[in-house]
Amino acid sequence: AKTQGKGQIAVYNPTFDEGRLHRLAVEAQIGRGLSSGEFEVHYQPEVDAKTGEVVAVEALLRWPRRLEGPLPPDEFIEIAEATGQIHPLGMFVLERACRDIAPLGNLRLSVNVSPAQFRDAHFERQVAHVLEQTQFPPHRLQFEITEGYLLANPERVVRAVETFKSRGLSIALDDFGTGFTSIHYLRSYGFSHIKIDKSLLIGLSPGSKAAMLVSGAIMLACGLDMRVIAEGVETDEQADLLRKAGCHKLQGFLFGKPMPLDEFVAHLARSRRA
Ligand code: C2E
Ligand code: CA
Ligand code: CA
Ligand code: CA
Image 1 (spheres, rainbow, N blue to C red):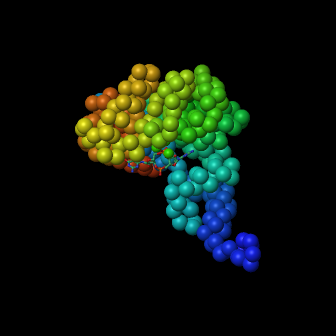
Image 2 (cartoon, rainbow, N blue to C red):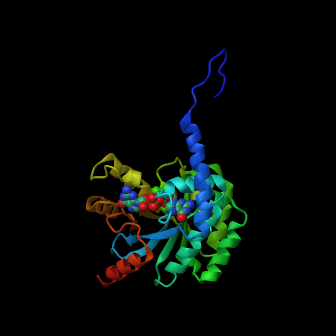
Image 3 (cartoon, rainbow, N blue to C red):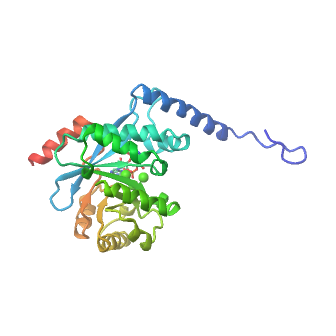
């Protein structure tokens, strides 16, 4: 407890210490989890908006064998970013996903990259190493980075995007619509895709404000020669509207949830037969 002026003692705040303890515990668990194989990568299909064919897949990290019980990725990734463990975790995802997806025809692979990884001086070399080890063709690989980082590090982002592009990879701007990227910035980055955040799809029906916003974003992206993916598509109505607005790829529970590799392979085979 802390003394607050004359004789006043601040009330002991258990949530603060519990939060810290939780983070410390999770930090140790992530280390254990990495060395004992508790993590897994799941795959969510991305379909061509016109044909419905599965053309790409997003790799999403899971922790199914955590001894203390399940924890959503948002939560443990934030901790891993704070502790630096995002570096080994991120490389685990990249390597596993490249190995898993390499044999699946011409399927493109999207991997989420944390700002800290993008900033890391070793990242480019490590990526090159994984591509070589797994024989994964660079032109089938895409990194997704979030808008927040863009605003904080414009020059660093431009350079990294250029380097990866020169190697054949492409970069997508993730969670588009949740930040405040200016049109000027968007134009100077060289992203090949923007990914419209699922929060923008809430209340998406013909004539709605959400529909105007989404079709505006799609027009803007197309005008800048970028392709557009919508994430979080759950209903046929949303899919129809996005298709008519010119969206190129759709991703969401309507087309498939993130799933383990074997399920994804079966899903892919069914969709290719259809
Ligand atoms: P994100 O990159 O924006 O990923 C999309 C999230 O939306 C995923 O949540 C996915 O399961 C969920 N989603 C997909 N379709 C639908 C839908 O139709 N409806 C709804 N309600 N949700 C849908 P998830 O897997 O829990 O991941 C949460 C976040 O954790 C991701 O957001 C990403 O920021 C982060 N993340 C996951 N895996 C990785 C990773 O390997 N590396 C990094 N750096 N971050 C990751
Ligand atoms: Ca993503
Ligand atoms: Ca998102
Ligand atoms: Ca996100």
